[in-house]
Each structure stands twice: as C-alpha cells, then as structure tokens.
Length: 126
Image (cartoon, rainbow, N blue to C red; front, side):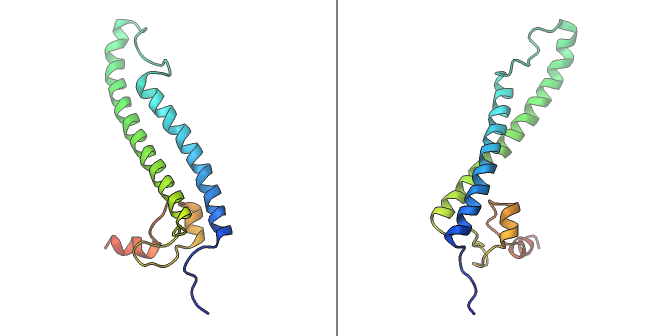
C-alpha cells in the first residue's frame, strides 16, 4: 500500500472550515487591538486630571508597545492562515515543506497554518 501524498478534497474542506473559523476570530482580535492603538475605543487619558496624567502616560506607553507587539503577531497569524487557504486551493496543504510527507491531521487541527511536521520542526532546532 502506497503512502498518502495529499489530503482528500473532503479533508481539505474540513481544514478550510477550521481555518476560516480561526481567521474570523483572529481578524476580530486584530481589529480590537488596532482600535486600542488608534484610540478609537475612547479609552485614553485626555480627560484625567494632570496628577494622574504623568503616571498614566508612562503606563500608556508600555501598554501601547505591548499592544503593538500583539497586533503584529496577530497580523502574522492572519497572513499565515491566509497562506494556508492558498495551499488548500493548490491542494498542497498539509505537506511538510522539509520532508515532503503529510503532516498528521491532528497537528493541522491544532495548528492549521503549520508547514512543518513535528519531526522536521524538531530537526530544525538542533
């Protein structure tokens, strides 16, 4: 019996549904982070008294830096999910880019944007 080289169309549709769900949540989270950065959420220190403003500005700067990092990570996650959708369209989804073997479905359900099998990922860390 030969080893399976790609996922079936039905399996790809299952993965597409998982990715679309994660993409929707990720996009909402990114939009919330972006709104927090631009002050669109109305949660700034412009209306606080001057005494608190000095303390708040330092904390606000740290908070904005952290929010920016989170937004950048979220944007990368969204891009990775979209790239996974392209791989589904090309029917190359789930194929490890190092070994050329299929990534186990369990891994793809947990990390749907994965491009490496656990084996290849662990080999890369050595």
